[in-house]
Image 1 (spheres, helix red, strand yellow):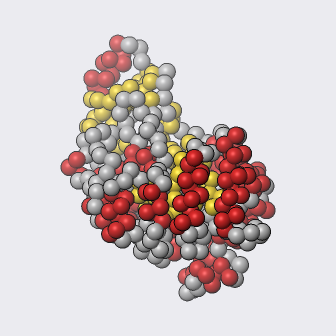
Image 2 (cartoon, one colour):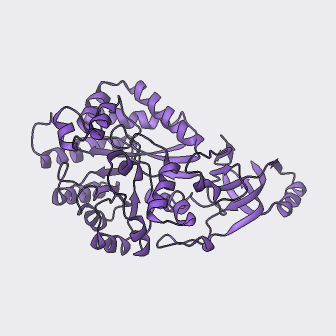
Length: 410
């Protein structure tokens, strides 16, 4: 199937922009009155709409003519979410705002373990319905690819249930759901043994089943004093990688150290980074690991943002993700979070939008999306404006008018 879509008042393809380092707004190539020619779900070419229309008419290609000014760019990619969960943690949020610490909330029955208990009680059908609802909301906001973690099961039966739910929900939404096993989220209170034994249980019992059933190709771990220490995490990740899983890491959220492990094991990404300093930034900049900052977690916890400006100025890449979860980041509004982060960290429009598109794709190891160039998936979002700068200016309150997944209008 071939289709020409346009004219767009502005088209941002992100062609020619680098994967690492700072980007000025002058680096953006903005095509005016442009069209996108789609073939078999991929971008065949872009260019002046009037020129493309003549070719389309000559070849009897269908034309989707746009009658109002729109700005088009690649579909957004949320490279870090926890949208498979049961229950709510509104109690935690209220306690946190009343001055209780993370440990105090956990001791009183809150925290991640609370979500584990509620998710275990939820049926797979309930989890599927929740994932679908959240994915559809993301899709309406122009987010066409969504990473989704397990990690509220913490035993073989429940982790498999979560990843089955993610897999089945993926069939019910036009967005692409990219699953990740986060069985190493925290040490479960009901596991009989030490942390090292639990990590070995994941390696010997959980991951082989996930691989055999093709439920995920990605493994994550939370490296933190309250979760898993650096040395055991590195050993776990190297063994998971030997099982042919891609690796990502919850790193440097409260204490530095996790990002160095991520680089040492060749992780696709190191996510959070609120505690990253100059040394961590230098290590990340010299690696192929994509730094992913999560402003939603900073806003939910009242913690500093990840050092986005320093990462870019230091020569690293940068992706921005929502961390949508029931505890620390319940908002889930990726564009609002990115706009707010950009204000505080002084990110250019080009840097912020790149962090939501092709650089976020790299954090997931996806080479077929994130730019509107020949051969890429025709995942697109169009906003009802004539100037792309309006997108971040409205801080998430401006919603897309049209969203396409693989060239199909959603």
